[in-house]
Amino acid sequence: MTATALYEQICRKQSFLCVGLDCDLRRLPACLSADAEPLWTFNRAIIDATADVAVACKPNTAFYEALGAAGWRQLEKTVRYIRRQYPDLFIIADAKRGDIGNTSRRYAEAFFDTLDVDAVTLSPYMGRDTVQPFLEYPGKWAALLALTSNASAADFEMLPVGSGSRLYETVLHTSKAWGTTDNTMYVVGATQAAMLADVRKIVPDHFLLVPGVGAQGGSLEEVARYGLNDRYGLLVNISRDILFADSSPRFAAAAAAKAKEWQERMRLLMVNG
Image 1 (tube, rainbow, N blue to C red):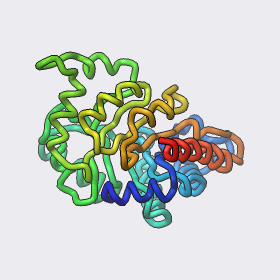
Image 2 (cartoon, rainbow, N blue to C red):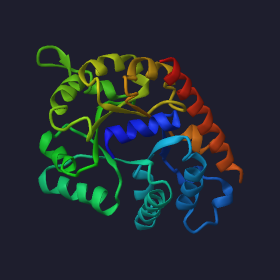
Image 3 (spheres, rainbow, N blue to C red):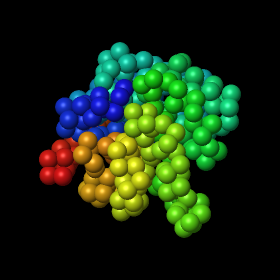
Image 4 (cartoon, rainbow, N blue to C red):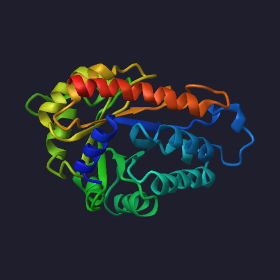
């Protein structure tokens, strides 16, 4: 999917919502407790409930890998279902991979050839050769960690380097030359929203994948204020606030209502921005 296609979907749906499929087995509704494939059943219901207002979905692979082969099979079924039923949804595998040479190439094959997602989150800290294999797939994306939302992000990302720029700024300056705005986006946490202005000075035209809004306390309005560009340029990920809006058998209807609330807030920001 090109940046233009993603932009057109945002315009059509009046939304830059990404639904995070971080399906914690311990938090699934009790009605799924006897299900042989509860993550897959839950995902299918959530996808059906939110696909009309979401432009992307982001399964965090850890929640599937923790269950071994059975978990990975449910992730594969989820991706195949989206491809078949909602081919316009942009699928991001939140895997945070990053390794050298042949290993990186095998990761790219795993996610783009075998699993068939649109994008993979990657750590760029080992350099260009760890990212390059992902950039060689037409229509696929590398989502590079830039400024994350975790409590310890400042341990390294905010360190001054070189001429006084911060490490995350150096990552942005260096890595933006590796790819293009059609195959590279950056992960910037919503809890760092005010710093999005600095990010935008370096990468004004790239898409930003923004986790941390909702349950983690990030402000959608602040993210939009500092992060929107003239082609919107944001994918704001909401996970727990949508997934676990209700724990009863009506969980999908509650998820649909919550996703619609987020979409309406985004629509207003797009109109007024």
